[in-house]
Amino acid sequence: MATTASTKVAVDDIEILLEDNNVRSAMGLPETEVRYPASTSSVASLNKHMRELEVRYHRTRLNLERATQKTESVQKEIRRLRVDKQQLEKDLHKKSALLERVAADKKLAEAQAIANRDYAKRIEQTVAMGTRGHAAATKHAELLARIRELEAQGVAQRNTIADKVRWMSSY
Image (cartoon, rainbow, N blue to C red; front, side, top):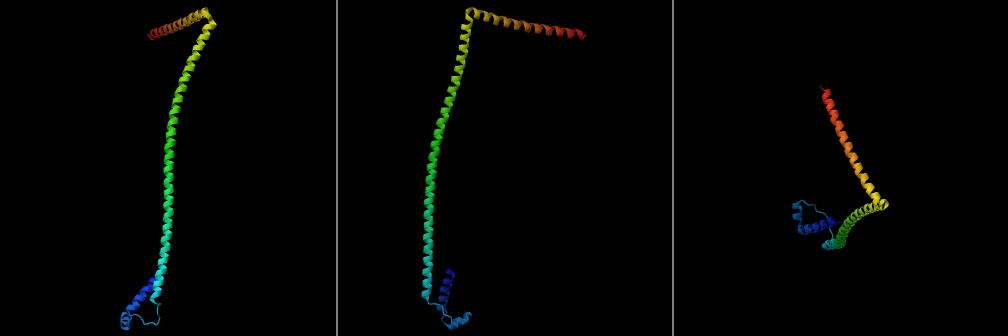
């Protein structure tokens, strides 16, 4: 529609210039009886075109305002989420440190519990055996150590004898 209006405007301008029939025939334009509407119709078409442009401008402006508002709201949301993220990271760091401290305390408590248990067992054994039983248990432990020592010496002597026998049998 806009091309039709611009064509009519151009034709009106040409018609004014080509009022003289001689110029018309010199340009090779046929002479017709068809007359285009007066220049007021071109003004009307220009007004119509201007209204269309105004409508398009206002729609575009509204779309721009909506897009701007949406962008601003998204940016606010992003800022809020960044602040929330920083707060969560801070809380996470605090809780991680707390967990590490609790784990260290737990290990210490377990070690103390084991030491206390062993100490309690020794006290129970001492009380159960009495002084005499404790002396017997100590003597028994010494004898077991001596027996193991003698067994180790016996194994060493047997190995030495076996080596000598092999050495002698090889000749």
